[in-house]
Picture 1 (cartoon, chains in turn yellow, blue):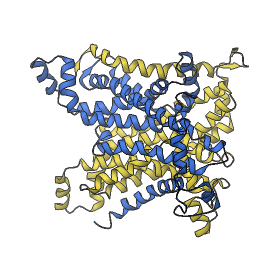
Picture 2 (picture 1 turned 180 degrees about the vertical axis):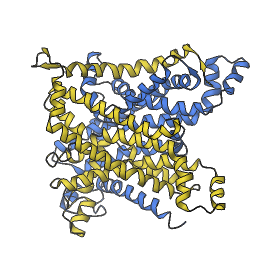
Picture 3 (picture 1 turned 90 degrees about the horizontal axis):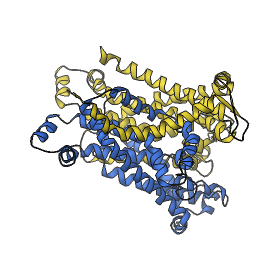
Picture 4 (picture 1 turned 90 degrees about the vertical axis):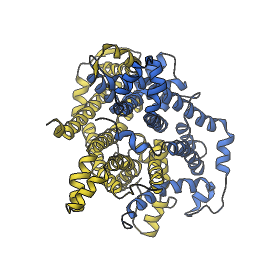
Length: 287
Length: 265
């Protein structure tokens, strides 16, 4: 049991100060921009909620939001089951376990723009291994700078390559925490592999899977650098995800008002969906 | 059992292919790269690496990155330790709300913060310094470190604290001499994740630096502009960015899986 102690606040103060400095000041700047219009020279006019209305109604924002949801949906639907399957088929102990874990974690430690550049080199027609293999060996026309479908497949495969290991590591951590006795009991009862998975392994992985799904949601929803380096949002606007569009508006066109309004809407959606996931996945525990 | 191990093997092969291609490319000459496809480097060359190790603007990129990543890791873990202890041992006014608020910062899209961060750090005179990037990365690394450490500390029975106080330990002495060694795996895992997320982040690091503290990842964009598109050089620089991560991960290989498993949701 935890004891009541208001002095514990002193322990939290450094964290509070550092995070607040980084979070509150910038978010207030954004709020400030989002309700004003400027024609340069630091002259600002009160704009009210016009930017928000304009952004929410604009086809451009809705299209980017749609692409973003599609991307995140595909990422979750592929990476979570794939991660679980790989974790289930890994050896529980032995000398190969650390080797597997190190090799699997490697993609996560590569800077994000290097990931984009690496996949760019990998997929170049004629020059890249994948580009050459697809075009010249299999005879499938594959060029992600021309074909929107190829660009989509490439950013999805890149993200699967980059982040499935996170799901694997988390699921694996949940799996190795199951005592052998559980499996022996299941064996005596003659439980099928599916039943073992459904009633022993899956419940034990629930906590870590909740974390995995939340993290994968947040990070894929906020993704910027990798697709930006790989496709630049193209061909056309086909892979312009929400962050890429936001940076285009804020730093490219320097439309600070609309960009700020869009930032706040973006952040609100991320928070809302994370909260929904969290509530849905932990509701059984509350009962 | 044999058939089952095929899945991890195939998966690892899939992970290694693009990395192999990057490394192979870094040993090729620009001519060989552009002249057509070759699975292995035909004319093995170290020229690309030579450029990086002799040009200060290149190798300083690495040093800059390592400086701010180390600073960030130390700051994040140092301030997260007492906070995580408070969260795991005490109830205080607004503790749950504070914990949740911390985690929401992990969800903020970096793109949202890029411009305000530039203005904030310019106005306090820290633009283009290592500490600016280190502090900016605290935004998402401190919440993560608090979360991981709190999970590990929650697993340590409270009797340990009480016995130490009965034995006459002061709080700082108990924390350093007894408590820290007990959760050293947690500290390792938290440090690992802070290192990882600071090392791979580019958008904020690039926004907050110009020359003095420019990270290697930003340095790489110049291969595209200077003399055409030097793929070999780009590949060599990319290959070198994998090495620090690989070293760090080797040290925590036995703990990494546990890191999040013990965190509470």
